[in-house]
Image (cartoon, rainbow, N blue to C red; front, top):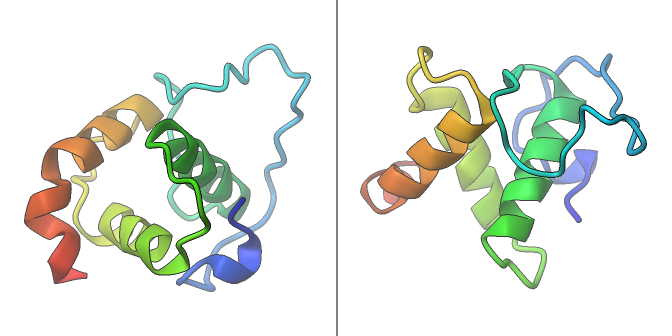
Length: 99
């Protein structure tokens, strides 16, 4: 599981906490908007993507690439967790070496 120390950027705000028992937390990237500058939301999202993509080991360099892609390349009009995950899947090969 990726932690705060693994993140590339250090300018996140750390205000939102997820409660695992909250029924709104489905465990799947969904239509919920992702606050790209909220550290806890980004960690949750990055860990969920790593899990969904079957990453077996903690590859900090790769998760940092995903983090940089979200910050610098995912269009600002793509705001939902599901939309961002789909954009990453569709564009990984094109952008992974640019960050």
